[in-house]
Length: 72
Image (tube, rainbow, N blue to C red; front, side, top):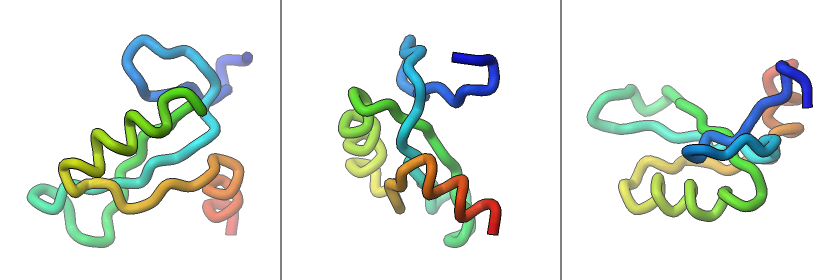
């Protein structure tokens, strides 16, 4: 891994990220605003559940797809 390799947002995890979890807190953000967490395979479900229980999770997308969308 290089310094530019995106890493998982799970506490203490240093694995390469392969997923983007797009979310927003409706009490703080406008409906179109998206914050992101990155997740490795191991932590994708856990982080998704954490955000989902709170009603924050909006989308889960492969990192490669997210980067391709950003390049459009």
